[in-house]
Amino acid sequence: MRILVCAFLIIFISGCASVKDSYVFDGSSAESTRQGISEVNQNLNQRERQEFVVALLAIQLSEVKTAYEVVINPKLVSELNYGMLGEHIDGLNYYEILEYSESLPNQATITR
Image 1 (cartoon, one colour):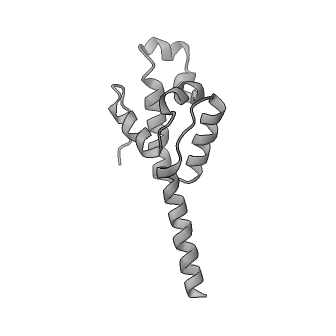
Image 2 (tube, one colour):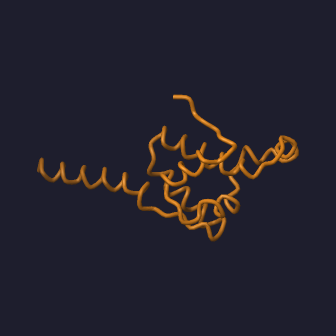
């Protein structure tokens, strides 16, 4: 019984960890991007989820050229634009999205 429990835990932990490596986002449509983000989010812990959302917002904000755009369209910072995000994250996995967001000129960070 003990071996069975250990085997289950190993499979469960490796399954959760591999989603970040193996899941490749399909950015062909807003809906496929939304589904992918939702699926990956479900397999992240709270800190990873925060980092992921900040990375997605940084990608989204990279399209903003002036503060005026945010003033006239507050949804730019309050909602994810899955169609636009899909254009940027198509073919990337979780780790690649984090790297990509860090390479952008508009960077948002979480202080730990």
